[in-house]
Length: 107
Image 1 (cartoon, helix red, strand yellow):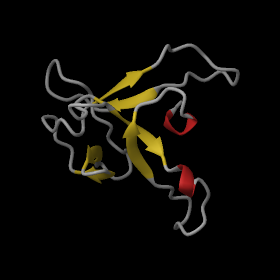
Image 2 (cartoon, helix red, strand yellow):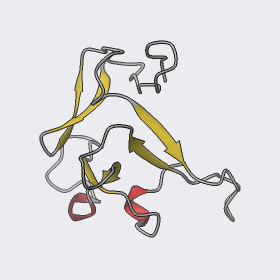
Image 3 (tube, one colour):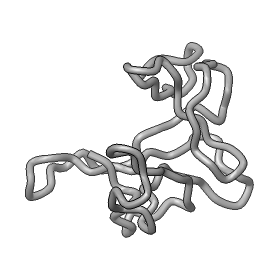
């Protein structure tokens, strides 16, 4: 995680690629980090309480969702396995935030 502009939300930068996650147009992609890009700014939503495995589950929410809903990072449940994907790559997407959706919970 890297900091964006003072007082703004953080952005998520991949250590290997140096690119940041960006929401927009229905897809979650990697692109050059830009602290002022509101499509890259995120916040973590959750209680911080540990689950039975000793991990804290949280939603990763885009700070600037649409006017009618807030979007969160979600694993693509239709592609939960490796079939058809190179290596261990598994797609992610954006979805209307729901703490009851286990594909949106990250730890």
